[in-house]
Image (cartoon, rainbow, N blue to C red; front, side, top):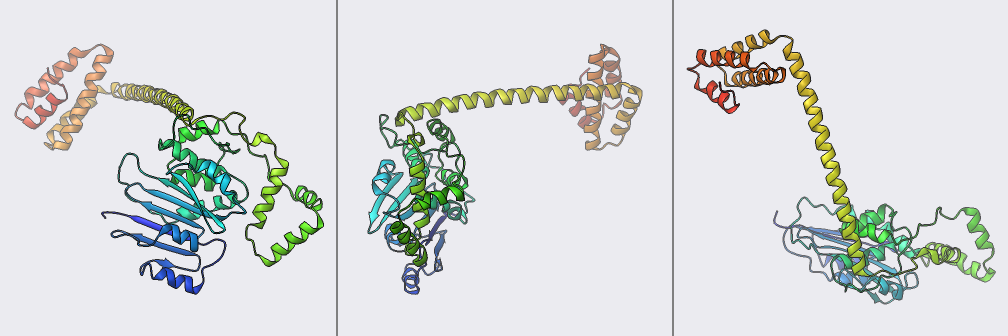
Length: 383
């Protein structure tokens, strides 16, 4: 396979009409198209559609994956749910950009492989489904996905070192499954993410209880509650629940949700490098501890083996002779290993002379077996 490209689009807020599906079919005769999705994979050629226009007109989410390292995620939300001005604080480079189209704002998170290494055994199926729930979180005011996009810009060295950090959302150190999937898809450096999380407040301990929400709703003006109920019944706004949760949290939280002092892109890169160096040091120390433990275990096992051999050395020499008499290469190997054991036993117990005498006799008896003698030389069993 020379290449792999995976395109997936998903409609979340409303299904596609029959006419819209027909319009999409005109772009590709091979794609799998339903009322909520468009999926196509290419091993050659390319998709001819305009990704931006498809997002503006039809879809709420898009994922692109190519085996040469390009990865892209797009999410669309209504502007009354996601403020374009807020998005602009985080989408500041090629790796995180955004634009408005009609009533929507579209966020595009992008990753190019810095090493230029082709990836193989890729499969894009299921990736977008694992990330899409982060869109609902974004609609409810969780800006961590946008901050991940800003980190992607930092990691790709698109920002000046003195570029100030935008407000850090709470909970960067405790990403949920969809945000973790997004971070992995965008290949966010774990050390950079850890450095960023150090400046993030802890998220709220719990989701609001029914009693808390009831108390808050009771205090809303009657006219506003009528509007909310009408919206829920008519379903004109699929993000109404997210908006209400966002509003509730805004009214309950304080400035502790973001850091007091902003850092810079350069400071985060330095902090990430420090964390990486410390992690690598700890890993090296652990590898050394593991090596020492393995060596000690091997030495102990070797000593137990020699102890067992010491119980019946004459029997071991007899076994050596029997193995050699078979004249089979595999049995020669076993005999040579047994001789190595007998040599090591003699060295351990301070009696190498008897072993050397027996070995000299053995070499004399089998002087016409070059294959055996070669094995003895290679094992260092010379007289």
